[in-house]
Amino acid sequence: MLFAALDRRAYDPGMAIDLEQLAIVHYPHDVLRQMAAPIAEVTDEIKSVAAKMIELMHQAPGVGLAAPQVGLPWRMFVANPTGEAGDDRVYINPQLSGAAGGSAARDEGCLSLPGITVEVTRPTEITIRAINLEGEAFEDSGDDLIARIWQHEYDHLDGVLIIDKMSPMDRMANRRAIKELEEAK
Image (cartoon, rainbow, N blue to C red; front, top):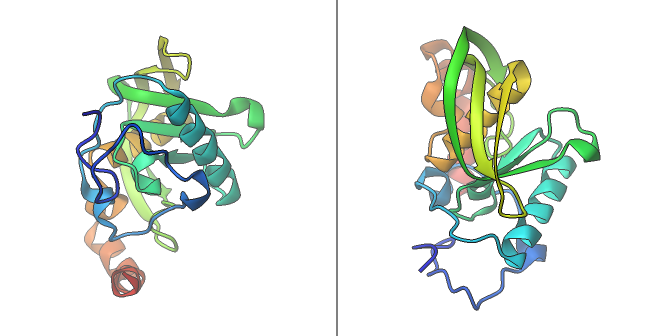
């Protein structure tokens, strides 16, 4: 079986995902805390979901979106640091390495945590290895914004959210917004 769960359902490769129903889920949705499962094969369904995720990312608007953020416990995310259509990228089964260049603190938001901003310290340079939509492995290195996006989206694949990285000051500043999200569940 490719995935153990799909938004609380068993994953059935014969059951098509309704792309029109895919939407960004908000905290405290259970899938946001799950460890995402690797994708065994790049199928037409995976390609269609990736295209829908790119569409949702642009509509939000955002610079990245991980599969768990649309209710799918898959190790895949999309990213675009510029907002230009030609810069859309898909990362399947990504692995991060080569943290370099020191680290920097910067405010981050999250499409699954609307209205919440957290200062997060991350390495400023990183290397990513992943599979693209053609099923080919690739490696890329980046710094500053793209490195931060890769790390933020990768965190989602491990069930880690920016609220897990909050300082006491951030926790106080965002307490009301977090409570509202929890109550809206």
